[in-house]
Length: 166
Image 1: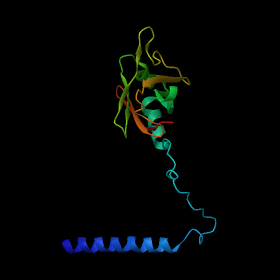
Image 2 (image 1 turned 90 degrees about the vertical axis):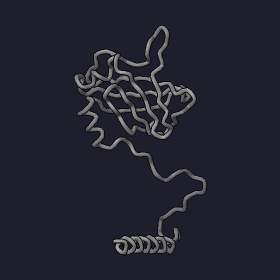
Image 3 (image 1 turned 45 degrees about the vertical axis):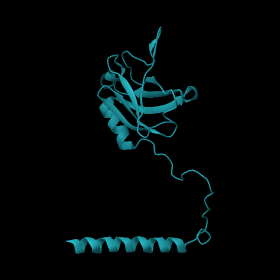
Image 4 (image 1 turned 180 degrees about the vertical axis):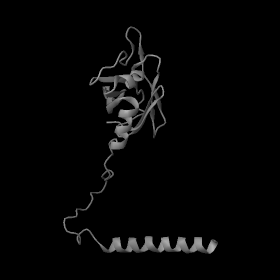
């Protein structure tokens, strides 16, 4: 059994080494139209929006779509907004008894909705209507969540995971 594992490890190492040597032989000048990456630039990978299957799940599960998480007010507040497509399923999102939280996947920061003395919570509550967009604002004091971070929004039993902060 150990011999098979050793053989498999060696073959993987050899394949990786041959791929590296083939890649090093192909310089950017040899590839037509290839541009050299500028030094000091950020990652070439683009952030991924919500996948189609996740959007379908959120529509069926929570009765909402168009989920957006944005920084506002110089980054001190984070606004989570959604559009209602099924008011029966989305009703639980706007109930006052459901406490919303925003959790940063990278920073592990747990943000809550601030409560103002005369206004109350900075979120919309009430009976949802089809096609209407609703929002809630989380306090981001100390800039714990930054643009480009992934966050999870938890409202009662609803979990919206991996949303990208714009």
